[in-house]
Amino acid sequence: MKKRTWIITSIVFAIAITTSLIIDVATMPTHARTHDFHVVIDAGHGGRDGGASSPSGTRESEINLAIARQLERELLNRNIGVTMTRTTNDSLANPFAGNQKRSDMDARRRIIERVSPDLVVSIHLNSLPSHPGVRGLQTFYDRSGETSRRFATAIQDRINDSSLHTNRRATTGDFYILNSTSYPSVLIECGFLSNPTDERLLRTVDFQRVLAIYIAEAILQGSRV
Image 1 (tube, rainbow, N blue to C red):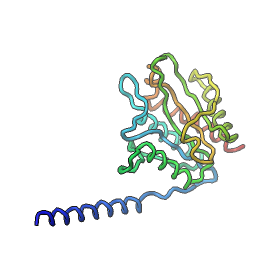
Image 2: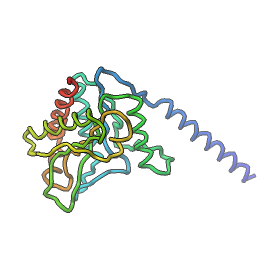
Image 3: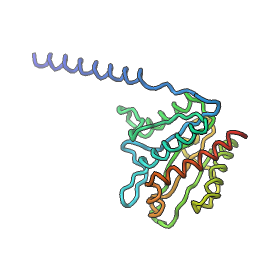
Image 4: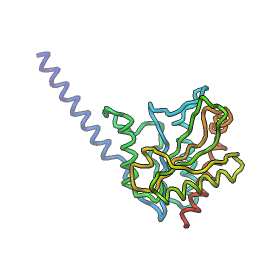
């Protein structure tokens, strides 16, 4: 009798889990273009994958999302459509996936493919603990994309010309998010958490907004070419 009760309980539990998954999938937002020029903003990492961290414990994933939300506002203010790959601190991974990182990245890729954007902008932070004096923003683009190179260069040049004391060149990068689709993509390392000055600035809303304004201005300029 106990065995039969256990079997029935297990079946009911399995049905409940399956039903909840179906509901979750059915209620997921449909990602689609909303403007003539549309950008997917990808806030890197999330959930248990916090990315890089500073000596004081600042998590990359949280700062990435904060900058991404600021960039979303600035782009929308310039009549550029936006889709966010994530809007919370959670991961996009299927909780039952064996490889959580791969599942998370695949979910981001699927969002990009549904939207068919004009540009993908992935927001990240850097860390180089062995050289804590290194600081500043760096842009990357996929190897084969002229449009990606143009936007990455425009963003890097806008930051270089600002008062943020950065002097770098956009360069190619071998990152999954850059190579996972055929859409123009750039990845922005917005600063170094291993540098105390960068960390202090990156934690402030004012600095996050300044970065977002410069990036949005460069994207708007590039969208008119």
